[in-house]
Length: 300
Ligand code: PEP
Ligand code: MN
Image (cartoon, rainbow, N blue to C red; front, side, top):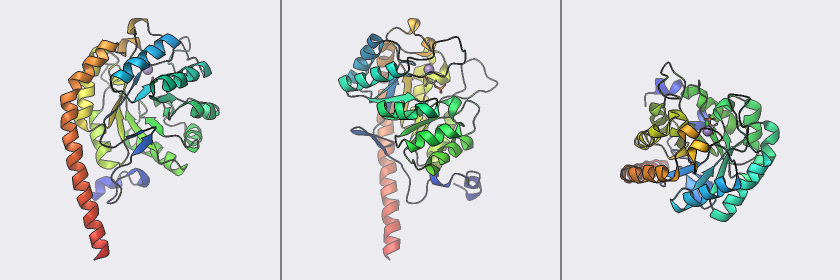
């Protein structure tokens, strides 16, 4: 990449790739995000009931998802809609992890909730609306938990990287970036899925990048297509909304897949994931060679 172009991102030195730091791998339970395995995070927009969450977790475990998502604290655009179950939702998530072995990612919205959410979650989600809430970034970073940082809906790639840099500055390098669609003049879908940002982030940064096709699309019919695009763009995994009965969901039902829809999406993705497997393997070989030649130069 041309140096002048990288200069645009000079304010985010710790999140940019360097010769010796090409990938960040974030370990979670017994697997890792940012390595060879494509990681699927799935589940309802919001934790609603024990039955809703546990049936979803059970289904996802059987279909190879690694991480259960579900909001206990919901940032809703309308103040008159469901705001989340709070602590009760966190307890249900912890129960789902205990029963199914899935890791938990859930949003933390306020600085004061960080200790409580960090006690239950394996990964703290910083939502789009909070990407620039610097006191929340500091508290979340200091929790020591891995952080899923969602791109703000009007944030540039440079803005996203600056927020990631804040997390590093607050002592937490276990950062996972998430593209979830941005606002543009195009209103056909809920947001505009910026697939180019995934490719760009993968070129610029060593951090894992997760794609959220659900919030980008806003309509479940479009979610599988955006997921395919995300794989081709180089994403390390997906964050996708799944609900046992999307038409009855308390939030984001229109964009949630039912179990069959999720299974079909994953089946359709499998040839794309196989191709990605070859690409990741080639990249790792190239990287290993580069590291070996660097260390040989250093010895010589
Ligand atoms: C969510 O993941 O349910 C969510 C609220 O996402 P975002 O912050 O991207 O809107
Ligand atoms: Mn949602």
